[in-house]
Image: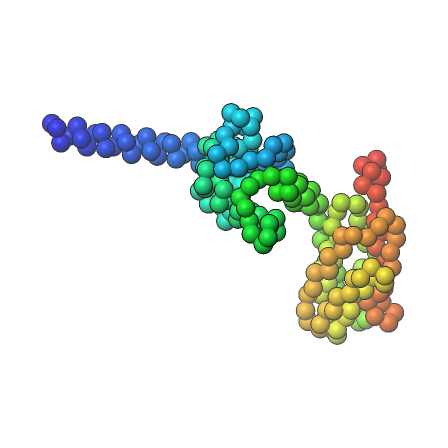
Length: 213
């Protein structure tokens, strides 16, 4: 009987541990893409003193398992959270004297917002075939906050895609496909060239204009 009771206690302990792990595991559907952090956080910070900011940080970090593989949302800023912050700082270059500190202060909070805003920029991918010295499309449109990517495939020879005065110049060897990222052009129409007798336009419209159409 005694042995049976010990076995039952062991099973109960395992179930409790598993239940704790499930409750604290990060949700695959909970995306905290652009959280708003209002206070600095450091080792020892807790939810009660930060209005839930520690848990918010942990949920944000847990979205990337390479940054925060444990993914625990405990409301306590311990060593695991500190290590995750250091990994995030290393990835995005938020360093002090070349080192990640693990302190989630103004510099790191500002970088989080910068990364979030960049992630909100949408992409527009347009496929282009270059053959017989010309592109099969010579007019493209995009809007502010939208990154235009021209996926150019060169069929018969080498091509060069250039936007004069904008620092955009990409070589496309014969038989290859290259992605040309265009994301910093001002509002208006811009000329591009792709060789002798080959060229076209890229028109960038205001995002507000797009909303009213």
